[in-house]
Image 1 (cartoon, rainbow, N blue to C red):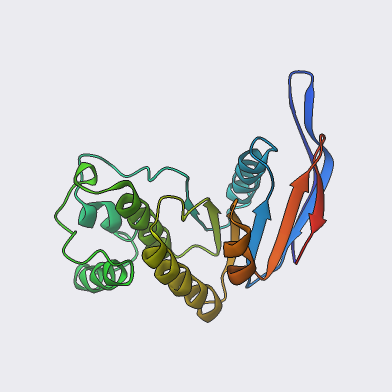
Image 2: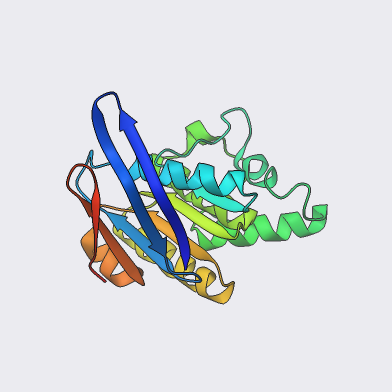
Length: 198
């Protein structure tokens, strides 16, 4: 288990997390759910920053794609593996991940030439290429059409299990969570409490 204990977060007089603890199943897909505004993104930011301080290698998918606008898609992906992988191998890896994300022939396009859903799939591809120990994903499939969403989820699930990774995913989609998650944690109340629903 990956545990985070004694989380205390306040905004002015509003106490969001009071001595809150949460744990995630390793080598598995963990979902965090809850109503809008409950504090899911705040919690995931706390977890991300904590792991970063502990020098844990993490791959992150944000709600927005955060692609570099002046670099084409190939360069946006290459940047995360430039110091890890030889040039010829980089080409193969990038071509393969784009195929798996249904983004064939997008290498030379720039972010503004892609739809929001396509940009998000590039963002997911970038996280997979970086290959962190823990994947932190904040509503990663928002904006994806049904067919692409199903394909991407299936691919990520296989990737997580085959490579013994841990994923922490925020979502509002309970059906998606039931199909995809090994563990589902529901956040509720103020200050936040949790309930394990799977």
